[in-house]
Each structure stands twice: as C-alpha cells, then as structure tokens.
Length: 135
Length: 135
Length: 135
Image (cartoon, rainbow over the protein chains, first blue to last red):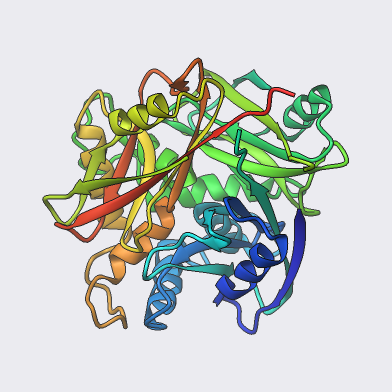
C-alpha cells in the first residue's frame, strides 16, 4: 500500500512533525507487523527522525545545518538554492520504521520530521507499508 | 533478485548518475510493485538522491561537502583519505525507491547518484528488487 | 523477526562495532536470502557503515563530526546536547544490509557501527530480518 501525503511549509527552513500522519497511514493499512517507509520526492527537502518534546531541538538542527552548509557560499547553481540541495542529501530522502501491533516502533523521544530546506512550498510525502511474511 | 553494477569514477570526488542503470535492473526483474534498494559496498563512496537537471547541483554538493569536511584536517588515519570516509557516512551506503507499474517512483527533479569520494576507482553497486505482497 | 540488542557506551562520542551482533541475529533468524534492518530508537545516537580495519577511521569520523557540528554553538536546547541531536540526524537512525546465504553482504572494509553522540549510556538497537519472497 502506497499513500501520498501533503504538507505545507511556512518558512525557508522548517522541520514539520509528521508522526501523526504516518501513524494514520499505518492504522489505515491494517498491517500489524512490518515496515513503514517514508520517501520525500523532492531535492530540496528531506525526512529525518529526532526529538520534538522540546521544540528547540528541531530549531537547533536547522540552525546547525545553516552553519555547516551556508546559504551563500560561491555555489554555481543559478537557482540560488544550492545549500538546500546539499542539506537534502545530508538528511536523506527516506526513513523507515518497524511496525509492531499496528503501531510504528519509535523510541520515547523520537518523532518523524519532514525537513523543508527551500520553502515555503506545498510538498508531497510518499508512505509505503509492507507486511512482514509470517511464513 | 540482487544484481551487481560497476561504475568507473574519473576524479577524486564525483557524482555519477546511475538512475538509468537502476531503472534497467527494475525492468529486468519484471517486478511491478515493490521496493528497489541500492547499496554501496565501499567505505569511501556512497549513494544519494538529488537533482541532475542542472549539473551544477551535484558539483555544488561536492564542493559544500569538501568545505564542511576538509581533505586535510589533522586526521589520524594514515591512508590520507579520512575525509572520504566521513563523507561516505554522512551521505550513507544505501537508498531505496518505491516501484510502481514497473518503474522507480522518483520526483520530477530526482536522480540517483553514486558518490565517489576517493577516486578515480572502479566501484561496485548492489541493487536488490523486492516485490510487495499482494495478499 | 525483530530483536533488541543492548550496547553500553563509555564516552560522550563513540563508534561501537556491532557487526558481530548483527551477524548473530541474522544467523539466529535462519533467513538465507533477504534484508536485515538496523534501527536506533534514540535521538542522540545513530547507526552507520564504515571501516574498522584501522581504528583511526571511526576516531576521525567522530572528530570531523565534532568540528562540523561544534558541541557549544549558541544552541537553544537547554539540555546542552543539541549537537548530539544534529549528528544523530546527519548519520541517520537506520541502516540496511542485504542477506545472502545466511550472511550480511558487506564490502571488504565495511563494518556496522552504533554511533554514540551523548554518552556514556546504555542504549538499545532494534534489528529486523526480512526474508525475500521466492515466488
């Protein structure tokens, strides 16, 4: 089962918690044991897993990424968003979580984040739920 | 089905578009719905997904990686390629894409790149296509 | 089959080779052909694949990460370990390796490392082995 989600970012850099949306896709799939894959079909956005109990954590991640990969840095790409492309590759286009008893298996502090690096934009996220073989 | 591909890099750092090769493996597998996994069995190379419409994008990614992880930086590893190892871990040894109707599901601007960080060399890439359960 | 492993880190930053532990889980699963997924349910730790033949390589990776993402850098997160969260997202919470003839398919120099970024702590690692369909 593959499902397409939509998120709207409101800033150039933004971490959007999509754990609830992913949890809903898993519930709708009725898969009890398996793996859920999240894929971002964009080249200036990504997906990552980190803490959201303190909203300062995603904020700090964005800030540290901006320092490590500065927005202006003599890039060749004329569109002006080269840094966003670099960050997308560093964070990665996909994540996966195990499914047990119909729920994603996440650590106490783990949330799944869509990472916007060149917003604001309307973005797509693809989610696929695969059942584990019982035989 | 697992298949081994070979690529030859021509520079120390190089992003090589392997989307066509991956697409061929998927077509040969005759899998219509599933997941395609790409794995790089090296420690100074990686795989990532990004834009290739403008060749400046992969070039900028290489440049930004060189700035964030400088080639010379008081490393201990005597082989002299420690930076390449760091970049390999940051980019990651694997990627996965969904398969629908026999084709990889990629965004408009997404291509799959083999990332050479210590070339020129002849390198291996492993690709595995897994069919989704229909039941 | 999902299994939980435990590792104890002895320093703030540490790369712990878990290849042997992962290999044991695969052997115990009796799966001959498939994929093994490794997932770290923490937000200040990660998993990566790199070289361990020279122990200077994992040491250099830790050092380069510390330089790219400094421990002190005007972060907002009051717990004081924001850099560890950033590094966890950069390295990633999961890795996967193919299984052939009951063994993980790794390149000559590849080992699987648990990455501690905020130790010393006792940590969990989840491993799932999925058999490939033969039909």
